Image (cartoon, rainbow, N blue to C red; front, side, top):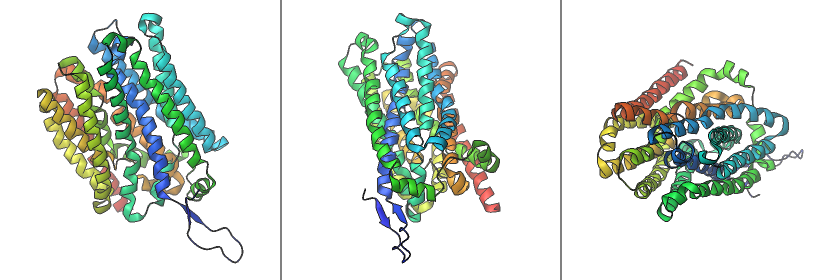
Length: 436
């Protein structure tokens, strides 16, 4: 691999030259890995809003069926931290390559299992139990898929460009959503409703399985390469015992999870929740709305890139704080926009995606420097897991349940709570760093 650039010449004693891995190739690995994972999760999320209520909960009214589908959607985020802990133990014993291979094959198997799963009409309640099981396996696999490349990228990036390199991995989110939404839009436009609910919805899960296989080999090529293993060892990017991590750095895990709360709260509010609301309470075409969301995802991708430039100029924590204020302001207009028909709902999606891109671009690892080298690998993984669990896991379920029963004003309240969580966490982090 031509990824190594010597940092000093070989000494007379014959010692092997130290080497740095190229940030550009690390970034490619991060984007490939994250895009495949996000596609997998967005396929399940979109199906939870559009398909699963009719396929797995036909004995309920549409609202209740959707709420139960969103409850199953959340299971993966509950299982994810458990997967991280389990697979960290596997890595400590058998290595990063074995861990990644097992986790991604588990993710692919669970995804393929969903694709072949008969609906309630065939298996009855067993179908729901199996769907929940496959979803938990997806979450365990997602936790196990942590390869440390984002941390390696951050530590190898030039100090004045860390915001730029940090945002590269976040591009996997809009890429994954664009592909997932595009596949569902094509199926909705091409198939009769009966065919879509019978067999058409399965195709995105087959595609997800194929993408996982390709992503597995692309990521393994990087993480098992000798220079990457050597560099990760130098930087102590290896698992540490979870108990030790929480004894030494537990407060930083919590602060890191809440620091990204505004972004993670917004994440599923502009992607999954609106689809359920449009299907339940609007006459809009699902295909047209998916196209608007795809446009929004392209805007989010551009905003993620812009976040790298902004963060390198003003600082990552300041950027996150400023965007939390922006999301808080957006929360005041969100209910009105969602009640404003196709034009207002389109504006909600486009503005929401723009804010999401700007904030999410810097949401990962903004405060992971607090862990130091020894605890960074495990600390960064669990911080991300908890951020997803607290901010995003139950967002579609809570938002739809509150808004359907008490009005769309609760949508704004949910977003506002996330923004306040971010501002409080960043304030505490700043105060702690100032004292130290």
